[in-house]
Length: 604
Image 1 (tube, rainbow, N blue to C red):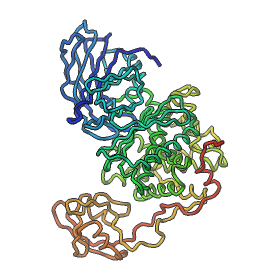
Image 2 (image 1 turned 60 degrees about the horizontal axis):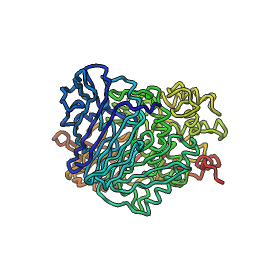
Image 3 (image 1 turned 135 degrees about the horizontal axis):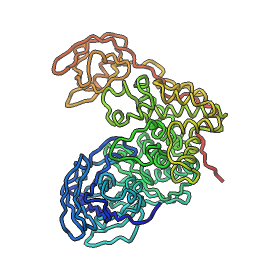
Image 4 (image 1 turned 60 degrees about the vertical axis):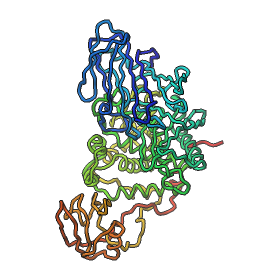
């Protein structure tokens, strides 16, 4: 990795947060390879497979030489700008303003209280006009913000900060393109919380979108659980050599999300996750942190082969997201329970939550995990009301499939080896920044061949093929029987309410159909967007009122009135019992189960 300065300097000025205006600068030193310098925004980032358009938020673009002479420029395509360069030009200075008003884990957001900076949606990068190899040299970064703020970032401090007129400028560097694009910066007034785990520095930077201060006791519990999870990761993968890790936690009214970076993450959760007594929300926070932390290995170092030198201007497809996201979801939660951050009961409750989602869909008969992975760009990130019928989530279904793979591997290895060990072995063989890895990136063939070489995996190639390429539901009940556990209905007795099998939204006093569950009796007579009006002539006032009208009506025929495209429609419907899906784990489990959820850490 070269530390030679490439002649790239990137700046951002966050002193106009009240307008959401981030002032951006890019300076590029020659030599230039032609009379045109083309700069483009990345249009996606690994971990978020959706084409976005940062250019739509840009205005007031200028380009000048080192002497201040203005340069001619024009827009090119949907994501770039082309600057004309006189022959004698030594440096091109570009400036523009971004409207940074979108709050999400994948965007740059600026207001009066903070800056969350995502480099791919802040700065353009030279695409033509300079030698390509310069992109893999050091990039300089300077950030200016109110002096009451302080930064948290994975970028490397390069020199001391400078404060003038209550504005501080911080200076950083990134060793190459990957580290530059795949990092974040969070600037706000809150103190950065630093803790050392296994000798490795971890930073936590919190920001609340409404200025609410988190409960100190609950925050202390979270920091303790973070340390437990970190140690469990280290016990499996070993202590990483890439050093300091930064967690940015955004607390909001209702928004949720997470995005991993090389040595950092941004996690966004509703603020009630740190309220006393909100156990479900807190369990979700712990799970999200573990998931994004695990991505340091599974996605950032262990990558699909075609993500080694990816093109951020267009879609880059892989059939392996079931492994990179589904596998991360599965193992991230396993490490929660093994570390003690979750109890066994926490894990069972979360399993039940996932099984509820799993059993209300039938897309596994129409889309395989490999197909779902490849089509993430047009499916998962563009879902609609009928998605559950025809498509699957490589997160959820990939997680459940890998759980089955893990159990089968443990069964065949007599409990000596599991899918977590397989992931660690894949890292040793194929991950970036591993001394034992002599090649970068994996494909399905490499994953399959590695599985066949590990304990218990010799004959498991066909088993993996069926899980990944067949359009069928994995046999979770069979997998759980290995642990002497049963998958049972949440409530064994028949519910008293009849079942319509629809998702509903209350909108301005209307009860509107938003989606259908598998087997819904309304599926063939109504459409998404229809308003439910009455049951047997009784006006529906709300979703809860509808539930009361259906109470005790199972196995009977009713007349339902609804509005479709402005017309009143009535239909006779036979109401079934709600489906009694197996969603919860029953039984205490055997020794194999207790070993499954036991910590891998070695304690003195």
